Length: 257
Image (cartoon, rainbow, N blue to C red; front, side):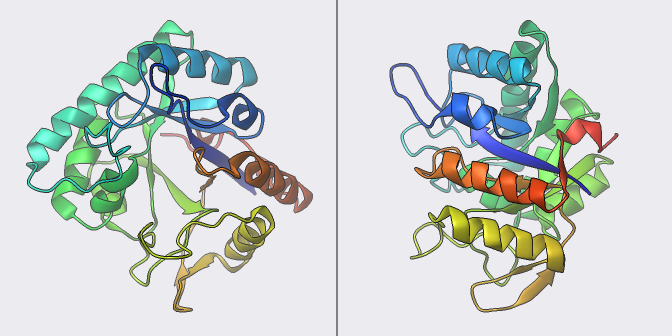
């Protein structure tokens, strides 16, 4: 079995620092690079992509709502899907250009925060994001949560998709992530997160907070880079997956468009 391990990186901005990107890039196989709307700036993006390139880590765009103050985690209502499409095109384009400047290429797209949650349940927003990806580069891989609206939109647009599970988040019965406002939604313990992921891979299913089992196919596992325990969690997870005989590899190496 081949599997990708991804993390949201490049989320520093100007003089403000977030996460330990250097350490995470020694562990993960794909990096989702913030595109300036929720975090990141051209210098941070370029620096993070160079560091990823030097380690053989694949890079992708991590577009979001335009929400620096709220780190992209505040739902924004009332935006027209066609406007979201253009905002996502803008962010992917910036990431693609900086990837080219560092001598690598953009491989995937993964939505961030509130936009990421909303496109999983809102068919119009999901189709806008999928269209944006196809317009910029139909060879880009779209990271989706299995069974939700973004996966359906990606299929409709003919995109290659990577189905994702989360090491450090819990799930509601609709298959989406539990709101961060709820207690226990974010898992901080590295051992507990590792055990959960191994169980999901073995069962080919996620188990929700109520105990419901939802079958899933898995191509990639996410550890959030801004989690204070992210490095320990990612390292524990990588060691456990390798010990289980799973080959960790960047998405483009086993998901061909």
